[in-house]
Length: 388
Image (cartoon, rainbow, N blue to C red; front, side):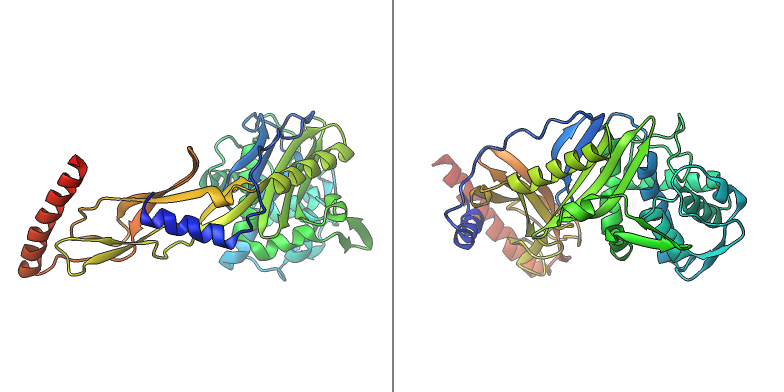
């Protein structure tokens, strides 16, 4: 074990109670559904899944992408929450769950968004889609473009509502990616998903996500149901800084989709823990560099490093730096210079590239000559050490 690993392991042992012991993680709950997935939001680690890449009908979970597109429009300034939209006859006539808008009536974007998120209004979804893109069909193209950008590889949308269509499909895995994006990219808008009630046009309706009442950790996201999809629920829960995303598709009824989602989330919180080990763009290692204007170069990560591990195994983490001991200038800022690995025993938990956090130019001729001689001795010594 190198010096860095001993220091890191000692730090963790000192910080965390010795009364916490590792144990085997039991199997995830058995569920009679089409597919499901449980993912840690920060580390993106899949904790449980069943047919998560199987093509499914997303039903009203589609509206998460509808809201994502509208959120992007709001962030760009092309749309504002106070802006009023005239409801078309098509939007008013859209079947399914409704916000109860009226043809020709002007409604604020803020109200329409809440109608989509809280009341799952198909009418509100179409009204927003038509305003943003001109037609719902054009809006679906925007949805598909965004799906590609987010890495939703097995998704295709044909409408903004989730009304069944043979060419309208996704997977539980892709929906987990979309759920993470909603929380990450538009945190202020995401808060609406936790609102339990919304009143419009004199009609007070509850949020269809009943976990908001029964599970204190849950703060979103969206329900869905259709004859082909069954009962679906995308849920997100936050406990002690750890956020989990669960997607359940094809449950038998409203009660079972809530029950299964609750079981998944409780399973994740009970048997796993998530920690941020290192921050992005912060020095982790100062590595010797030869022939440069500096003797050392700071190395770090491009992204925060989160790990999700079984409860009680944090004390067993072994982090190691892998860097060429013969680094030579020039070094370009951001250039790959090695990697960081995190293991628990023989199991690789995480691996991320190490980059140079600063640039280092070539040194003067005299500095390069000195380092050239020193580097030669360094290699000879290393060679003798390896032989011994």
